Length: 173
Image (cartoon, rainbow, N blue to C red; front, top):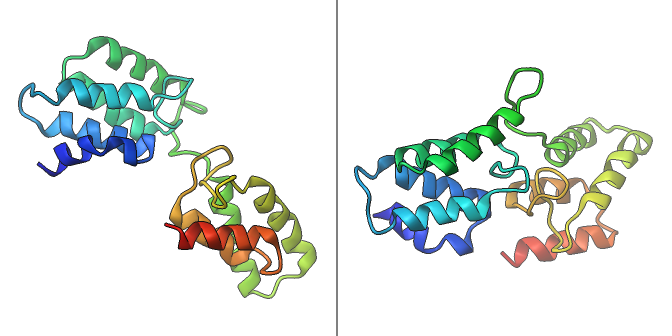
């Protein structure tokens, strides 16, 4: 029942999150229901230009599993193709997270009293990667999320507009 509520609110979630909810609904639902087509539409809507779900192998394989379970062979085939294309050197990696990794490492360097010469290139990267809404996604071009935005704000110089925009983003959630 909770998953069907999630399907009803799919437009309120990040596309990859909505696709994961839809896939899980398809996996755990024992037979076709009135929401099967809705769940498949949510997955289709979340697919990126490369056919994957947010260039994320985990989200893509969940969608593949759900589409296969629902008997949606065409959707499953395109997701499988996208999943195979996501391999790097024969392996799948969760995803690249340059913003999250940079913010986390910069936070560690701040705590270790690193020099501004070491910190400033990372801070400049974070300022450049900040989304229009004031937050940050885990990688450039990704929707802002709470944990990455909070970590990036912690390492942003408080005297900058970047810090102010991040603060407004976070308190506005």
